[in-house]
Amino acid sequence: MKFADESLFVPGLSAIADGYKGILCDVWGVIHNGLAVHQGAYEALSRFRSETGGRVVLITNAPRPAGPIHKQLAELGLGRDAYDAIVTSGDVTRALLLGTGVSKIIHIGPDRDLSLYEGTGIALVEDPAEAGMIVCTGLVDDITETPEDYHDRLRRLAGHGLTMVCANPDIVVERGDALFWCAGALARDYATFGGKVSILGKPYAPIYETALAELAALVGETVPRDKVLAIGDGLPTDIKGAFDQDLDVLFVTAGIHTADFGEAEAPDPVKVRARLEAEGLNVRAAMPRLAW
Image (cartoon, rainbow, N blue to C red; front, top):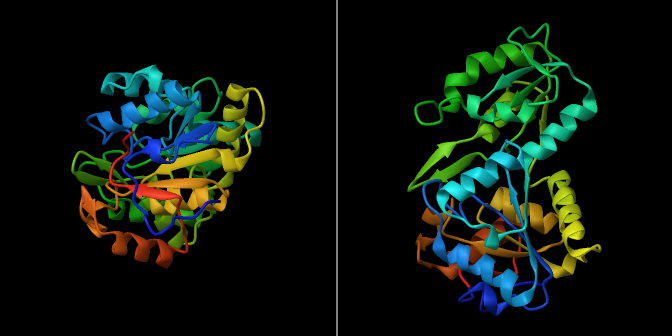
C-alpha cells in the first residue's frame, strides 16, 4: 500500500491514476447522494476508463442484487461509460443464503429489497419458531423510523437465538443533505441485546474477494492488489475495508463525514489526518469530491 505524503489532498484522480489497472468505487456518497449523480465523479470514472484503459467495478453496500442498482444509477443519470460491473452486498448475501440451504427467514427491511430473495425458493415468515435466521436489509421506513423503534422486536428475536444476517453494514447513508439510518444500525443494536450477527459487505473480506474476482474476469487475469485503487467516503466501511485488504485508497471527504472536517469543499487537512490516525488508517490521497 502506498501511503499519503505531505500533500494529502490531490486536485483530481488524474494526479494518481497512472499504474492502476482497476478501480473499486463506492457508489452512494461518492457517485451520487441519493438524489443526483455527482458530475465530477461521472467524468472521473469515465475518463479513467477511456484514457487509461482501466476497468471500474462499483462496490456497494446496497442490500439488493446488482440488477436493480444498474437501473437506479441509470435513472439518476449515470451512463455505462463510467463503469464495467457492480458488486453489491446483496449479491454476497444472496450467495450466503443459497450456500446455507435455509428455507425460511424473517425479513427486516423495506419491500424494495425483496428482489434479494427472487429465485431462491426462500419463504419469508414472521414466527421466530419457523425461521432459520433473520435477514436485515434496513428500516422499513428510514424517513420516519429510527433504530429505537425496533428495540422491542430485536430483544424478542434475540431471545430466540436467531442469527441476524446484515445485508448492509452502513450505519447511516447520505440522501441529499441529510443522513438516514441503515441496516448496520439495527445489527449493532441486535448485538447489544445478545443476538448473534453476521455482517456482510464492506468492510468485510467477502465483498472485496467477489469484486476482485469480477475485476480479474474483466481484465482477463488476476490484478495485483497494488494495481487496484479503492475509492470511498465511509471510514468504517470503504476506507477500513480497503485498508484491511491492502488496497490503495482515495478518500472522498465530502460524504458522510463532511461535518467532521470543516467546509465541505475545503476540508481541513489537519482534521482529516488526525481522524485517519485516530482510526488507525492511512490512504493514498484525499479529495473533497471525486473529480478527474
